[in-house]
Length: 144
Length: 144
Length: 102
Length: 102
Ligand SMILES: Nc1ncnc2c1ncn2[C@@H]1O[C@H](COP(=O)(O)OP(=O)(O)O)[C@@H](O)[C@H]1O
Ligand SMILES: Nc1ncnc2c1ncn2[C@@H]1O[C@H](COP(=O)(O)OP(=O)(O)O)[C@@H](O)[C@H]1O
Image 1: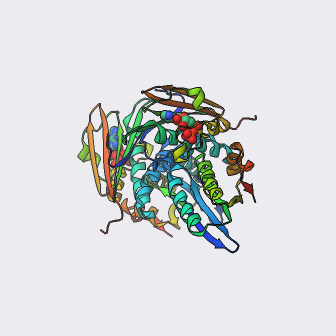
Image 2: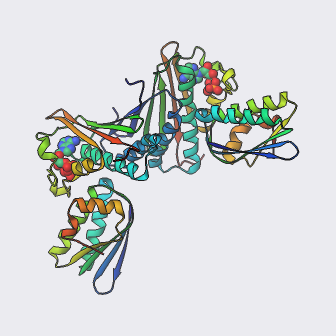
Image 3: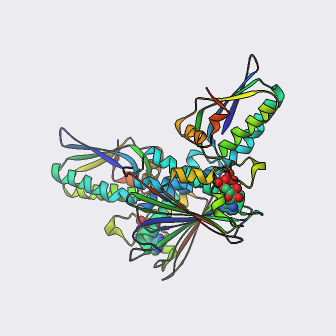
């Protein structure tokens, strides 16, 4: 475990009622880096997308778990959202704007696009049948 | 893991800057039970005491971890605060009002007393050298 | 998230959304809007977004879905009072190519 | 937590505390109060708690510690505008047996 950075790691059930909870948690954690309102909203939105994806796409059955991890160091927040669900066969395709496997439930296919436009780095690791990790970095209080 | 109740489990470093964070997290988690302002403040205060104890008393060296776990079911919140620190030799004595081993840092010895008066159940399990678990229950929205 | 529904004259269905529009509440918002659309068969559906304090891409699906429904009935749709962050996400999705911004 | 310090006439040191008084900020509050006490050697230390939005038992230690310090200098202490929840914790600790409530 990291000793120099401050961090948190949390596990919650993959249930839609936890989307708002995950936003509050990451918002409270990020606030120690003194982000602007805009930066805070960027982080909450990106985390909401990744957590929602784990809830919507990862698990066929109820009872699945989502891990939310975050590390804070000066001017930099790193977040990881992990699930142990079905995984993504083709990550490149999944990350294309408007690509979705759930049009029938009105998913727009814009989740990854939103994450990418609000965060400085987005990395997706996924293994079919074993789960998905979305790792994101946001630089805070840095001039562009 | 529990599937019927909603739960969360979180790990954070035993650092005082996380006291406020732990309060926000438990407050956001508890809010789904629709507590009164008073009940919410009771929960936050009790959790603040238990988390502060783990920060102040449990670890001789930096790098220790605190686990905060919570389970929600209708009208009932259960919280556990766990550390893997030095443990408490005599729990009965530790829970007495005004008993403290840290008077020099202005601890009042009232932490457990506050937890007991704000929560419906408080249980302390501790093993010398292995750590401490404080398990608390708050009934929510029930007439006294 | 709450929805305030006003049936205005001349077939305008005005709906004011308030709160956080995420996947969790999308189902409910969708149901309430679809009921109102089916019941009143409006010429125009106007979504007032002024009170939306948070929205992620789930909101795109909600808006596009209602657009399709009302278009299939021969109506049209517009969004008004769109807060900057919501606007950013709508723009990203190219929504204004098909839905008017009031 | 912020502390606003006013040196009033007749040796009254008035301090207004604002925010959350927990173990994390107790160190800083203690240091600021002790500096003001040592510098002004007041006859009375008055803590205005109106702005305290959260307090746990760490606050008891802060108040008792300042009481001891000012008493050793021959001064006295009172707390004013104590919010109900803070009051509950002070009462639990029997604080009002030794510190006046204004
Ligand atoms: N955690 C996940 N587990 C499994 N599949 C996922 C996960 N996240 C995303 N996907 C896949 O990637 C696709 C694109 O995701 P995204 O861009 O967020 O759009 P949307 O969620 O609207 O479908 C999803 O439709 C799904 O097939
Ligand atoms: N997590 C813990 N690990 C080790 N010792 C603890 C822990 N929590 C409490 N204690 C012991 O119990 C005593 C009483 O705790 P408490 O009533 O909260 O008062 P205080 O924290 O003000 O000392 C502490 O002084 C300490 O010796």
